[in-house]
Image (tube, rainbow, N blue to C red; front, side):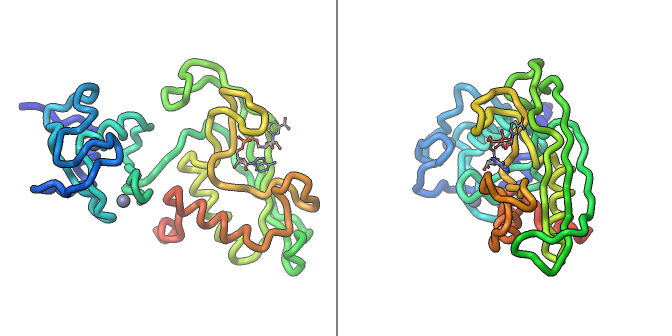
Length: 235
Ligand code: NAD
Ligand code: ZN
Ligand code: ZN
């Protein structure tokens, strides 16, 4: 019997079969869902035919099953899937952050805009290394500039919640990634991922400092967009 590959199992776990395809286009391959997947020539599967269409269980968006398989195989294959239409995350999304350490200190100073509480200081240390298969250029060296890097949060209840979620994001390798720095243009280097940090404590020369009354809510939204929410902390 044909064995179902691990990526095929992942896709099938998050999909409901559809007997008749809806009259829309597949936004992965841009072909009609009523015709075959545009990736049939490059993505082979013994159990998924190019005509098969499925809809994601929670958000209900429909795609060629083979197109979702092609998308999954193009990513870091961590068992999670993100709807390309609405960004709903299925499973637990992880990133490609290199090895390093995250340390936390408490400072007896207050941040601009948060006069009534002390400060949480997060220190990230990442050293240069060799890129793994999950990175843009496997086997090639990556640089790590400006480490240790620092992040600051107000030590109040919302700030501590963000800290807990950042710990989880770190564990899931979502805080940094390896790629091209927007700031310096350097490739194969460690860069911040999609979760903004306040890297200045008393000053605000970079625009990544305090005061910023919306910061905690904004970073909570950025964490949620990576699948890191309060629900994950409960267990
Ligand atoms: P990047 O420039 O590719 O940007 C990635 C993300 O980081 C973006 O969302 C951006 O808004 C955010 N970001 C940019 N500057 C930031 C800052 N000062 N503080 C917090 N977030 C910032 O990412 P990158 O290459 O990691 O550069 C981010 C910052 O890191 C640079 O602006 C610079 O301050 C610092 N850096 C320092 C050195 C050093 O040698 N001291 C070297 C490289 C980068
Ligand atoms: Zn398609
Ligand atoms: Zn969706």
